[in-house]
Image (cartoon, rainbow, N blue to C red; front, side, top):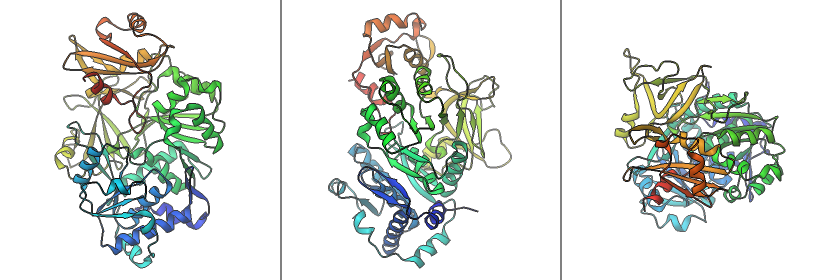
Length: 502
């Protein structure tokens, strides 16, 4: 029985030590190199007496950063990834929260690292990766590990402006990887193209299955996501056949006519999530890659990763949403109404998760943990935690879970309850619009629509009058040259709202 995430690496390094595990444009690490370097880092931590502690990893996105993650776990600790593209203020809040004794950096991040208000030791990865391996000590650390030990903390946005650190353990990650891998059909021939930064939990979809199956992951350069044609050419150059991307990264390729110039020749397995995929853009992908398998994924960081999936095997009308489908094995989705009863078929309720994939909660924040990791109200017989996602969903007539909106994405405007997502979906149906996002300014009671497209603001307003009820027509329509995105590729609605309120 597996209870340690590095069991994947320990097994595969004996079978295919020389195969490339992780690569980017400047380096490639084989499984043997990842194994050796991670054990060197673990030995360094042991030598410093650091055990069961958060260790900050502040490196540029590269294969060695992944080896650093595994090294921290090898040493019996848990990694806290940060990145130079994060705002300095946010990094300082994270460092204050975790109170780490050690920060691992590289030569590109060292100068910035030494400017932080950080009380622990700062070390260079290239230096500690030369540490002599203490096999006996590492074996003892491994033998002591249990599956509820944390292995990482990743930080999500907090409603108060203070980021929340989600702590995941061996058990939740193993459960997630096993279910995800079976669902998406990974194997040793899988070649991943990683899109997300390594300080997001979304990268789990590539990192650990690479170890499990002896697959290969390419870390795609960030700048390529600004150049759709070059991005697809990169996929072809490296024969990438599997991607698990946020929807906006996919729509950027389809919306700008990339498929008229070049198509992904090897792509066979496409998973997407985090946002609703506009049907018009999804059709462009299916037309370009009719033999590919498309899977919609859904799940929060607090549930370790994705917890629901839907294999797209039927056609959808433009005003339909692709379902998020059914939960992975060993996971239950409960829809709870506002009065804590199970929602009936077709009735909207809050999506709540029950199962092994639940994380440990928020690091050093018992108050916030207790607000959303709660006793299952349907079970009054014994303690049982569920996670309340804050997302609204319903079960359709086919028995599939359909994402409706965020609870906080539903507004009250002119006496009407409005889902901003419904406005976005209708705008996205227009051929002249490439991408759209809606925000709400509570102070002025105004719905604000941002979009990128080939139509003027006034003309778009006129087009929407035939599509939306009067009370749903945006009060302000603003055309952008480029949409604002977060670091992991989602539309940055918070930044759009802040821009409007200036």
